[in-house]
Length: 634
Image (cartoon, rainbow, N blue to C red; front, top):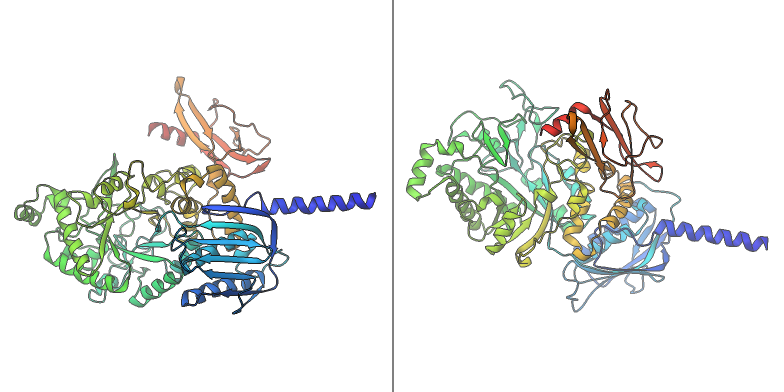
């Protein structure tokens, strides 16, 4: 009897351990179109075989990715065989299965092994990303991990993307990221089935692409004096300061990046941001401005002023001059080289945030308006955009721009990237133009994701839950004109890769699910659970991320007798918020927040922290009374 009891207890413990390890369903991001989980698990042997009926360089690369990761993290050797029966089998479907399309796949794990079916190599690649997520988190380790039971749960998955454009924008102009850092960025984005890398290559703070016919663009425009601290509050660089901060990509660098991305089924979209955001270009060629003056690459000192209500003005003219024929000659040279380098059908010309106040004072612009019968400055910008569109078209490419390119009339055939909310994208789709949705209300991942008193300084607020609500197809819009969606990572305030990763993940996971998975499959609470598991995966990969989703949301208002009242809430369920007014940081033994709090007489700060099941999950946050009063005034 004792032996039976001990056996039963051991069996129960093993079952419980398996249940906790595997969970009720694999934690996949983005969630697949269809998934059925079995009750068993497949154990990977120390030596596994791989076979496929496909033959191509793409398949060879995917096999290298598979065998390399198994060897690095798990110490598992993978050998390729011509036999149909293998531990891991990739089967090219003939004739093609139209239900899964070009990038879709079918993945089955059972007692026989791992089988993948796809129409093209891209489907195999995305199935491989899913397979890694089915395995223990240690598979993402960069060094061998001992004592791991390398298993995959029995699972049947049918999956394909909702959109063909699943993009991330990386701003390499404000702060330069090296070629290797961009490659690392690509490796991280493909884990979540992104396939479009939008490189913001030029801006006021740097010109990052070599143009051999205009060497000063990089000799002058790629470099500035180094600054550390708060963006927008830096002092201007003096003439004698060394310009040592920056960098650029040579033609060979670009070719290497394109090849690296292509191997991973990523397309690179280049952006040359004009006519505004052009100070780095003007530093090299000042005669391209309507306001001739000595220019220098901006170091992060403030010259664009934003009073509020969406308005702005510039204290320096950072625009190219639409009335100057030399501008179009220069752009022809630039786009000639860009078109030769980048194989993608689109080139992004920016077009955003063009302050037109200096144009209004320009005699050349006045003469242009009279000659071309342009009634206002919006039509001046439209004249410029349309000419740029013709230049890009002459290179065999299509033009895309931010939604401001619609002002004064949209150029024929232009694609629109909608960033100022969804309005521009809706209007462009109604005009039957291709649209990429990247609204700042959902996908600007450089904004605050938690309380500003606990976050690195930026502007605006975008919590993870709001990002997860992103739907690239607004209500009432014909989806056939929506190419897809993307998240934008602007780098004004991002000095390092670690900071960039902190801002991007997990919000980048939320956008990935919005552009890949069916709307009906999305569920916020389930996404939170899966995100927590992916935190461990990021830890194993040494990728930084934010846990701000656990931090309380703080709302402040003034009540009677000028008292400050603070309301607290959470975007994640199941949290308890503990607080103190006594200058000591609270823990779980301090009071639990249940109703709005009023600062007691003499208290100078409120300190808060969130717990779940007795364990601290949020950060200790200090909320000084004087800072909270400022929020009321705003």
